[in-house]
Picture 1 (cartoon, one colour):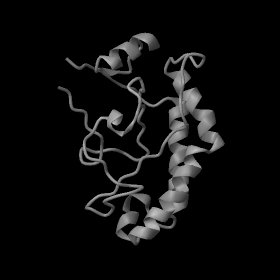
Picture 2 (cartoon, rainbow, N blue to C red):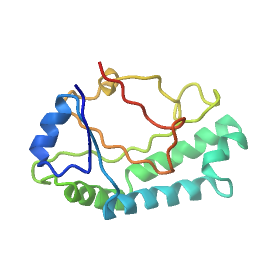
Picture 3 (cartoon, rainbow, N blue to C red):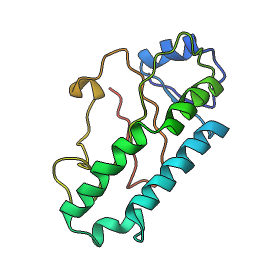
Picture 4 (cartoon, rainbow, N blue to C red):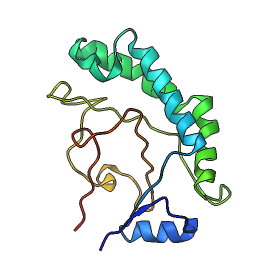
Length: 159
């Protein structure tokens, strides 16, 4: 049976073993995660200005919207501030940085109502990340940039 753990204080090795068994861990914001989310939001808002990012799809042609994301996403991924904050966030959650391998953070985007059906902001159908070549040992950490609601968030399905 899958267990959802909230703000668990188990050691990182225990957490990893439980994740590999199918458990899910949910954590409240930490100082570094707040800074990372705030930084991401600043980049998103600057990229879509003067539009509100959450509503931009309703005001922009698809090609223009995709062009904004094509510039925004790599800027976020490779920004020195992300590279500084990501290890701090992992450390705040009990990861031993000498034993934790991590990649640059990715900014995932999705639109609604069939606005984009392929490409940079395509909303993927329900899937396992390993279906898209993620290694089986990879553990993903997700942080929302904007508030989530039942109709705009990730769902977890267990056996």
